[in-house]
Image 1 (cartoon, helix red, strand yellow):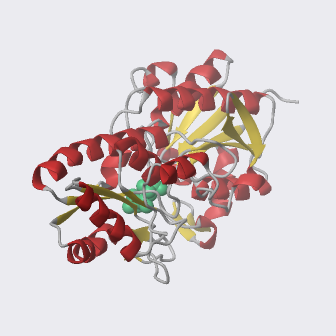
Image 2: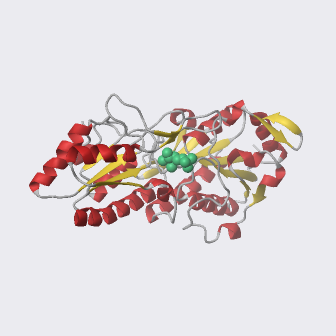
Image 3: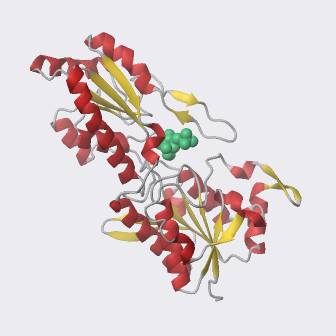
Length: 360
Ligand code: F6P
């Protein structure tokens, strides 16, 4: 067996705090084991041309542990296997070009850090002979096979801080504040930040809501003397019998963009409760800034484990957190699915027992 001498690393999909921490861990661990690292720019696009990559040495990752974003750049597009790309050698099918360039660049393996889209594409490349290990990332925490993805804790911490700030102004004005958080079709961020921030209603995609049940709860608070309320709504939440609110429908090149449910709820809640109601969308602020210490540690553990798996030639796998251990799982068991909040999840049940309504 020829030893692994040179690996590529890429980041794909929406950025998440902790991406740079993974890159740093991979680079340091690899170099300490005599393996060189090539950083590929903008996800798999970094394998389209020679000038879209660079050697990354330990000195290049010094100081990036605490930085949000990704030093490699990232893109969030649909399935590249359908497309033909213009290259310096003429038009080529995307997948063929990537595989060809992987070999021409003298790479022995690839570390792909990304969400379900990036990992599913990575799985396809694996099936076509590219030795690859995946690292799961997303603030949404919706990847099957790992208890947490890095980025999630940072997003929850930011959203909790925002809810704390909204609490004081809500109380001062006796208002209802609606806080729309990200998460795509999973309610993890809304559930965790809602509970941590002391929300009165949490609306998640897993539980289609009834607006009358939500406002009954808010009116009841008014009667008790709590003249303000906080409603946390996940961008993917929708009313019973209704549909998800979209900013933009899916296209051939991009996935759908969710968002706007908070703005829709705002006048309806104001009307039904007769209370001043305001809507705040946290949006991409949830993805920015420094990763929490939890995410830095998880990202570092993921990066170290990814190199270990490559050295053991355990390709077609994804690193995962199965507390307290970092393990590996076959990519095929994890991709193409969404990890949503189970109805018997203890935090959901605890929230219910505290009197938080989910609108059902
Ligand atoms: O998957 C991460 C995420 O931030 C989702 O929570 C959100 O729906 C989506 O990405 C936003 O994507 P974009 O940055 O392309 O608008």
